[in-house]
Image (cartoon, rainbow, N blue to C red):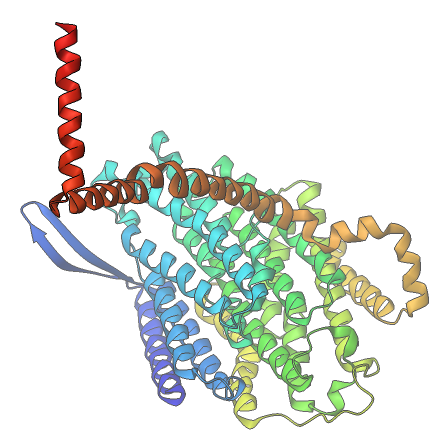
Length: 573
């Protein structure tokens, strides 16, 4: 099943790539409508939109998912229900593809809701209390976005069709349709985990590592970004995009700081994803959707590779995820560490790797724009923080001493995992330059003063130096930080976002629901409907059963009762 799925998705990826080349060369867009039911004047149709963007994104999604499924063959080899896991992953990919090719709000809802439902099934896959809590947190956070999409569907009834792609220009000039713009931005913020909906993203790390690799690269979290890219024509030059710019910049900053306080390997990588999502959302807010899409694709490659390398290391460490117990792993798994270092360097934007082409262009475009000092500061500090947590992670994993066990047996890499990682390694090296030649019709020339051009290098060097210093600190110097424990705790728990946005709110709602169920469902309504009615009927049936048995005592009792009634009535007369 693993191998068949891998071959099918890889072939599908190749077909999409050739179609993409053909479409972008000829500037083509194809729109299909398939009428499912037609009754009187009501017709239910399935719409599909194929253009260069949807074909390229489908190619990347199918390529990463094929590699992830092949990787799962080894990673999940001890799993008894491997078939069920593969089917869930395929459902996940299918939901994302449905979302990508949909120009219609109804089919977008199907893909959107499919992603939410299957992600819940995958997050609770290991079936323990931590996974159940994480799954519920993920499902409830994403549910907000689902409700907002439903509200958009209701509101678009004004136009008589749900094919939003035809109405974007018209909606932009219609003041009453600004409601749709607000709903789209909020829905995208829930799916792509922007502040204040960020807390579910690190919690979703309870899922198996191949799922994390797929979710954090090209599927679930990128759905919100992709939706905003499609709706960009409606949103451009609106006030709501400026609000989104502030929130996405703060998300980028918050995720970068939290990653430096985190010790869970997978959570550090998840917070780096959150930081990159903030970067994509903020460049979208500036009105450059193609550049956001470019960064989305380049980021997908190296982030999937990064999670796969983390999975190999976790396997080797007997399922230990705390980086404080790791160290010196490059001596035992050199190929995995090579892949991890290259993906980390691509994340930092080291020149001529895939991340450099998109990230450098985004930062220069931001410097070129006329935004205030706060946004400028958040952008460059977040870039420095990326270097900070990446160097810290690499020092803890590969350079510092091994800290887990006195007697240990570290094994070399698995060849199935290595082969799947090498595919993504090649794409992490080449995809940036390749996509830049394919997507942009003309070369960008951004002219800036020398110091503004060099700002990226300044903050990168500063971040990497601080990361090196922090990772080399002994336990005695770290104790000095205990003075600022409360401040550190605030930064570590994502600015209290889990408590504020999900745990706190969910607790009150769930508590109210529990009381409602106790008093209404299991209380009054039970007394007067199901259980109460059953008791009344039971008592009546017992009474009539005895009565029908022709018992002499009952006849005597009823005769005396009737005589007493007659006597009472006679006395009244």
